[in-house]
Image 1: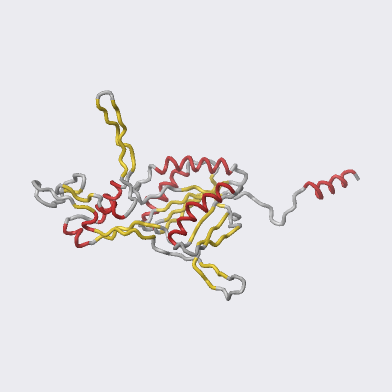
Image 2 (image 1 turned 90 degrees about the vertical axis):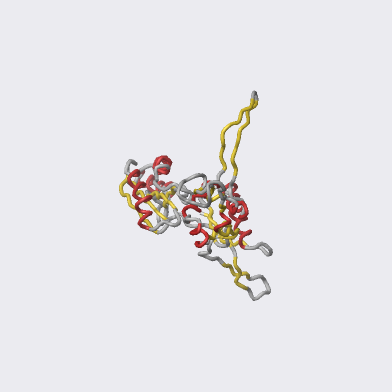
Length: 297
């Protein structure tokens, strides 16, 4: 009789009941973006090196990767019962070392990010953001810099906040192939020139007697006019002095800038998606208006 009573108390008051009990997902994903590369190049330069390094992680049951144009996903499936918080830390630590060993580390390579893949990580709340006077560029900038950060900072238990829709600012360099070919240069030279001068870093120290000053170079691309002034060719060679590109007599070197072979536009990213909402205020027929979406996980 006592056993029956204890069983009833245990089942009725202490044992949690749930139609679908939660099981911690044993999957971790490594995501890498590199716009401009084909699926084959993403597999060769990104997915394969990451896979080779991830084999050093303990308790990995299954490892696979998916590569497509400009995007790579490496998935690690662990055995059930593994401490996934520790596994996530181990994968992130190893990726910090692997990132510097990836063959293609130009400005086009964005740092990989490591995420726990859980099917239950679906948005619990979606918000539509509009403004009567702001355009879609200003509205997207506000959502990325203010709304997303504040929701992450002040709302507890928020895993991630994502904004989509609208327009994101982008400086575009539209190259004139005829002008570029006249100087014997290529699009890669334009890319390298932008990468070389779009920097902000220490430049060493300057000493004069008992005084010492720290020098710093800050030529980041803040607007289209600054990018247009970046040097491309100088002194008969690709700046800052690679041989083989004759731009004039050595006695009178000619400086070629980005603006001489291209147009620089302060515009926005190519739009690949859109988000709209139904604006239906009381007493109005309602209308569909462009807006931005905020998803909270």
